[in-house]
Image 1 (cartoon, helix red, strand yellow):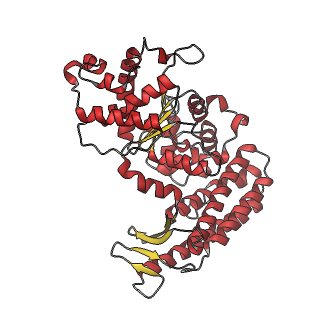
Image 2 (cartoon, one colour; image 1 turned 120 degrees about the vertical axis):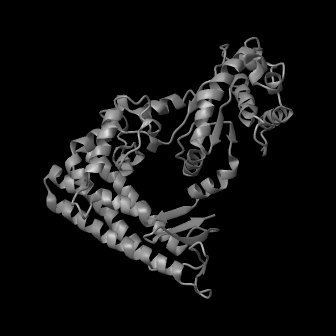
Image 3 (cartoon, one colour; image 1 turned 180 degrees about the vertical axis):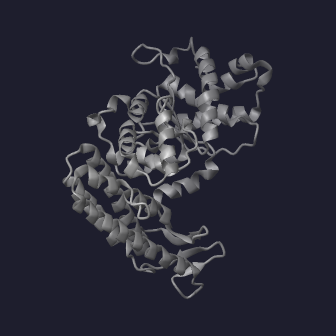
Amino acid sequence: MTCASDILSDSGPIARRLADQFEARPEQLHMAAAVAEAMETKTHLLVEAGTGVGKSFAYLVPAMLRCLTRGQTVLVATNTIALQEQLIQKDVPLLQDIVLDALKDDPALIGPDGISRTLRPLLVKGRGNYVSVRRLKLASERQDRLFPDAAALRSLHMIEDWVHTTPDGTLSTLPQLERPGVWDKVQSDSGNCMGRKCPTFGKCFYQSARAQLDGANLLICNHALFFSDLALRAQDVGFLPKYDHVILDEAHNVEDVASDHFGISLGEGRINHLLSTLYHPRTGKGYLAQLGLVIGDVAVVDKAILLVQQCQNASRDFFEALVNLARSDDSRGPLSYEPSRSARIRSAGAVTNVLTPAMRELALRLKSVKETIKAEPDRFELNAYSLRAEMIANDAEALVSQSVPKCAYWVEVSGGDDEGGGGGGG
């Protein structure tokens, strides 16, 4: 059976194909053999190798061999977009052709059904990277009441022009937006996805990408997507297909990314973004402002807008309390202050939690408004906003009450506006 060392050796097919551009390296051969053995024995492997060793080839070749000779699925997670693009656009296509040619007479290439196995690589992106054609259409129809200024409208128009030419509907091909927050109004979102009931289901970029997942056997994604899926799998709602092996490239970044997905964090910017999306007090625009005109019942919507304003006040009071806590240099108190303006909170209830009840009341109000509306697109929009408000309420409660066991809790103050953020990490 063909092995990774055969393909990567100084007389192997890669050397013959690339000629003077390739040089066999003992470290690369050693790493490839170790990766292959770890996959065969289903054990863990940690590799540290210097620049120029050829780490990508050293794990891609044995990964491809597992896919082609064993019918298994391998997931490769990287930290940077640059490496993902290098893998999917350059390294994988080159090696795919070479490895398949090397295996053309290998009986292991034939599956149990008598058909030759093929390599099906796929770059996997998170749902928020995809534009929703339906939500974009809805935003376009209501743009005058939905967006607060001319810059936001210009950003919307840029997305409208781009969607007719993009090959995959993802952020990777979208030009820089003047108002990046506009993307939130048009991105694909699980909370307001209509599934097969969606009038644009057949044109959906995200659903098309999901269909490709079913047949892929070499998955390339980023660390954030991998750990997001891992966290969701704990709730039996993961979205990645079943895989047999995982390769974490650029693994020195893994700890921070894993903490982000398995811990809890709450920033003032996240809350302000949701609330200003619902209603912008300075301009009088936002989703709720235009909803009153759509459903013709201004009174119902006005009650929700009032709650949005109450949540804005609660958020400001909540984070001001956290900032004051971080500034209190009292070693006998519930926190330890550091010069970086990061303060450890050592006991529950260090601040009064005015945010959770306000956000929960808003979430309930949005659900109530949803029940009065017949138009399904708006029902899904309200459902998504309600879920986000409820999640903020839950995160605030968990951080203040320190209800997540075996975690450290802290406050970080950053930015010129003294924005406060609470975080909990394992």
